[in-house]
Image 1 (cartoon, protein in one colour):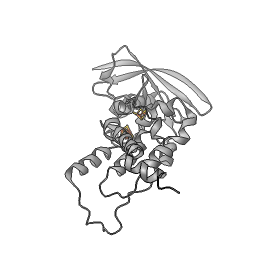
Image 2 (cartoon, rainbow, N blue to C red):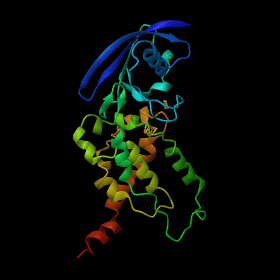
Image 3 (cartoon, rainbow, N blue to C red):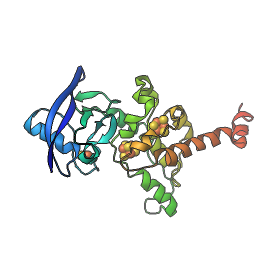
Image 4 (cartoon, rainbow, N blue to C red):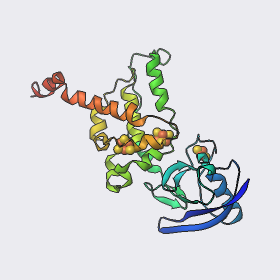
Length: 248
Ligand code: SF4
Ligand code: F3S
Ligand code: FES
């Protein structure tokens, strides 16, 4: 079945922009990205939209559809009523390059700030042994496709540009938690998580978890356990004695 849909697509650049209206054909089984491609093919050949796999795996096509952060290639048109206006805007947390394409380099900078996996120096690759439960924990976090929808939706940086400097965001706090809980990682990442990567800014609103297209339990399985580890270190009476009584 085919029908005509009303689309409103944000067009502009770093200097500003506005919503443009399109009436466009939609066919059975199509996703929002298909319709944007039809707009490109028939009405606005210079419309900028980033995509790659069209299978929900590359994380390129992140944007906001009717105000919700989504992958454009995984948002079925059947989600919307035929007479509903579908509004597509770029991710709000990152600077616009053009139209629906944003500059996500903030995320790469945050990734580089996290020290790499640090296995015990006397263990060679191939000698690593882990419990299945530890393997599974890492595997959940490693489903991440780096779409940055969680980073986009977290209010700590979505609403406060000045927090960006001090806050890694859920995707990278999850990476720190993954390494901290890794049985073969010998680095103590708790102090840096709090002091350098802004773990304390997260007040567990769980919006990151809600929008994750991979269904990763970012808050429950990474951020909360990481907060508990930081609290254990700070309030552990033996650690407290060690750092306060014997410090001279
Ligand atoms: Fe995207 Fe989920 Fe990875 Fe965040 S954790 S970047 S929402 S896949
Ligand atoms: Fe932000 Fe997720 Fe925490 S949305 S406040 S990182 S639980
Ligand atoms: Fe790859 Fe959408 S195009 S996730």
